[in-house]
Length: 122
Image (cartoon, rainbow, N blue to C red; front, side, top):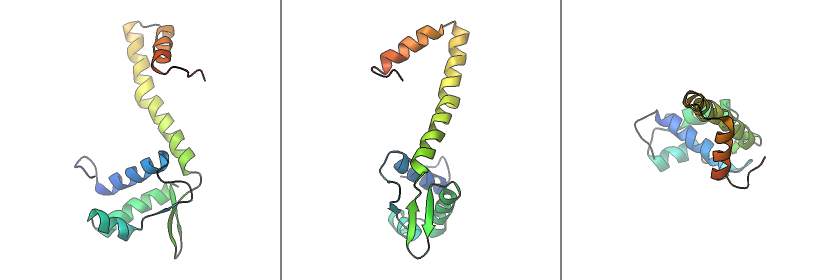
């Protein structure tokens, strides 16, 4: 599961966020404890705790004292909005700049996108 590109705690947090975004962890659902994560992935419990703390600070999960950690009700929508903004900033804006440099008309871009995503006219 882990690679050498980023700290393990960040990879854990990103995986949990991805699970929430994709619906593998639903709003209100309990997540594994830091000790369970540490045992399952054979990592230091402090590393798992750091990931969970980051998720609490970001509003993805919350702690119910004596019970455990749960997915925040608003987390799926917030994560979707964050990913949409990141998509526009990291994908669409550079693509539009490149298209402008290549002299590709906006109408051609829209037509190509419609070919790639048929049935989407929102």
